[in-house]
Length: 406
Ligand code: SAH
Ligand code: SF4
Image 1 (cartoon, rainbow, N blue to C red):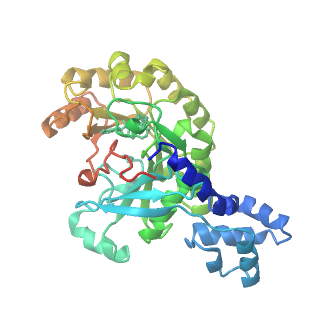
Image 2 (cartoon, rainbow, N blue to C red; image 1 turned 45 degrees about the horizontal axis):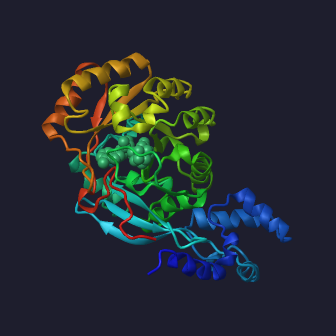
């Protein structure tokens, strides 16, 4: 098969999709209203479409029953369609985690899938996303679980975390990360990022405003290298879907210009911030995260300092423990000093490295991980261990790599 045969198929397949400019998923109420006004329709119809897509999880224009049927048919004739990302393939873990291959409606046949993960009960961190600023996020005691499951409408989970991808692949090239192996395929659009969340909310029958769902932008990709689309997705999720930015955490490998822009975001749409620190000093960090040669730890910390913290908000430093490389007692003490010197309200999330094919690190034992945590705590630094979720289905951190090519 010639190497470019794909592209030939793709040119062909592109034609019937000419109407995909009229995809509405990803547009906000105001944009929808303006498009409808252009067609001579009442702008409030925009709100009806956004409510149908983002609150009732409707995926077909014909099902938007708040619109007159004639208008629905007119819109469909003009090529309007919802075009929400679809869950092409679910993988279920024995621990309840589900990993999804999410498929995007595309202009070309390449790189049209990314992965998202559903983790009921969080990941063993305090609130799934590792946040603990909200007292209501305390784990329910086992004896209370059945009652809370009842309250949750018979759902087997009392809270859950959704892990979202921001790009297909990643350009950052962290040495321990499987997603890095893909390279950057492409950025995801706002609708593709928010659509992963909505598709999962729909599948899991989540009731917005009642069920406790956290979002972590920690899937494939570097959100701050797709900044505008990432933030547009957050605005959709907050303003249209109705999720709270206090239940969202974005993780960055330390893209300084991105952090600086993030610092300017209005608080009502600004998620919490996590920094993938992963090493106690520049020498080790540059070895495991080559991006450190561009933006050093000090440069990243300086940028983080400019992010105005809410009361009781803390920045999370993520720290992947690589056997022998970053997991030694001396590393813990150096890390504690580093974090203390920042003067930032901070906590550390420890993640034992999840192995991946073709990556030559080792996973530290749980005893090593606990010793590391205890050293940090002994130095007065709050430290939590993030339990790997869905390891058996490669859903854990840094294991997100498309299993089926788009
Ligand atoms: N690109 C962003 C967000 C996605 S990665 C970032 O790097 O922050 C989310 C987290 O998973 C990061 O903290 C990263 O350091 C961690 N991670 C990546 N690969 C991992 C692996 N193989 N095992 C454990 N954690 C990993
Ligand atoms: Fe990209 Fe994050 Fe993986 Fe680094 S850890 S390669 S930034 S996804």
